[in-house]
Length: 455
Image 1: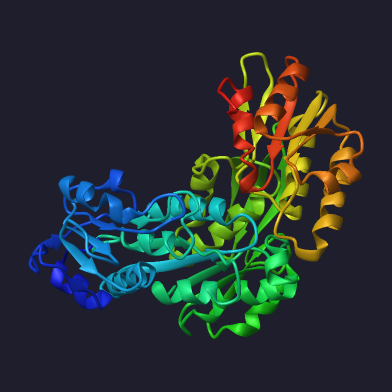
Image 2 (image 1 turned 45 degrees about the vertical axis):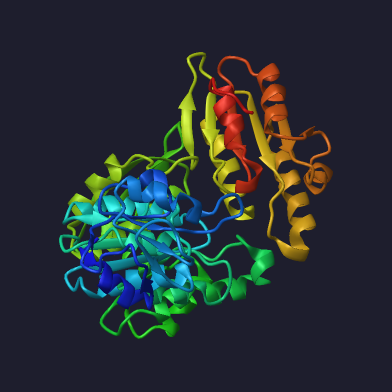
């Protein structure tokens, strides 16, 4: 973060300094919402959550070196008192990014693959200069400005992931840090029940390209019709990625190895180079192409793009993490989240990785699908039942529709029970997919069968 005196922080956030605060004291960052992450010079933002109230940790944060606390009520520490900490964070992040004219902001959105694409693009951008990107999925109204506030005068690229829970969310995030390049991956079925249909999801995702300036660039998926239509919603120049022949950046001669990792020729307007991904699953190609197209627009040569993509390892947890136990059991931990599209991709990867072996799946009912939820979860059950698996374990009290689609599946009430069921059946050399919505906590199953504890 760029250094800011408390008086300037108060001005930006329309806040008031309490009597303990020195207007000349300087916030040097980082800006944090966890008092345990405070270092000297931090700004601690006191967020009131469901389980804890950050205001209760204000004194602890000050004692750890925080220059001040951003609070909504008086605290026993130097503080900037504001009406809404979320709005204050957004204002602070916007003010900071506007002080960084040498920083190029790149936004990434889509129904699936945002985090992987963001991670790949951050690695590519880092080859050209100092780059800031969120850790994991810091992509909402709190995580987004916190990431922006990590940037300083030396930051050349700010790679951001933008998530939408409803219409207007991406537009709001784009106002905080106006992007020059916007990447839209796909329009799928994630949060279908919240939005009410794929057309509404497309409307929300397209807010990113609407936010681009006329001299910016929209990087769009040529293989997704709803994304392709977004070209008419922006004044920015459009470049295409995908497998289609019209894509400016595309994959040719694509193959999968026995472990489900893709190799392809990366074709760009200025040449081609071979890529051999270390990421698992055919769907990783789309993410790699999106990142490559954005990096190409930033000026990275195709040979360097291919080299970085071929060296990239997964950065964010529980997304197609493939681990082999000493006895040869392969665990595919893709438990961070799930929707109908990503479930199909994950079962496809299990089929490749587990070819010729006994295969198992631990899944949970999908959520936020609205009135289509029961039917889509029955479809999930049929998908699992038709995958030729040794056993399917469905976790959770809401498993009914999935079990109707897969009547031979095993029902487990929770992750611990699923881990026990699975452990009793596994033999050396088996392959296991663990995937479900975030709330199901299925990562605990993967951790248990890899030697941890599911409790």
